[in-house]
Amino acid sequence: MLRISDLHAAYDKAEVLQGIDLEVGPGEVICLIGRNGVGKSSTMKSIVRDQIVVTGGEIVFDGQSLAGVRPHDVIRRGVGYVPEDRRVFASLSVLENLKVPRPVAAPDRRRWTVDEVFRLFPQLHDYRHRSAGVMSGGEQQMLSIARSLLTCPKLLLLDEPHEGLAPKIAEEVVDAIVALKREGVSMIVSEQALNTIRRCADRVYVIDRGMTVWNGSVDGFYADPEITRKFLMVQ
Image 1: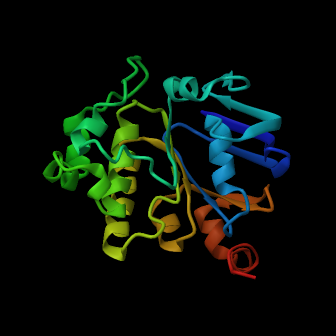
Image 2: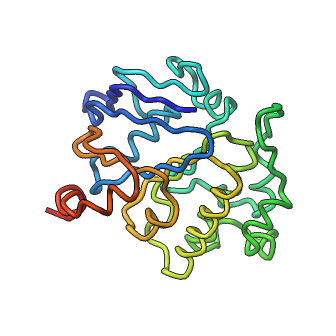
């Protein structure tokens, strides 16, 4: 579904990615892991062309190159993106936020409805008339994921989905990711919580200094504690 080969990317003249390689298959969940600032978020931004310039390499989604494709067209092709900063419309209600996306009708795309995302996130139904700007961080995260699903994505990008959330709310977000996996949604999840990786991931990619330095199965990741020591622990 997605193949990234030798990806290089920069903010202005500062190169932040210097050789990212990864693949995602249909229905597969992969986790990008690594310390803060090593290129996980930049990898996701490169896929959707969010405030970053791809300077080398190739990104192929669903058999087609994304070179030169505008951000909104990447979304329309089937890539859902939930950034770390969530980007909900603070002055709009939950229901109004959910009416913003324009679904893409395609025979190979699961069409999500507002009622279905309310079943996935019952709190959003309870707060459907509440302004998004007064919601907690966890509630806004759920809203951001729900809104992205309404674009009918084939691949969902989740950047640090429970960063900064209270433990109970974070667990609810992880439960939602697990539920989406059962639905067959392909996902790339940027993550540092080892418990989330164990529950959600099919495979793991470790990123360090803008490069892919390790990839393999979840079992392989846990079988080698040196990976965690070298690439996850704060130095």
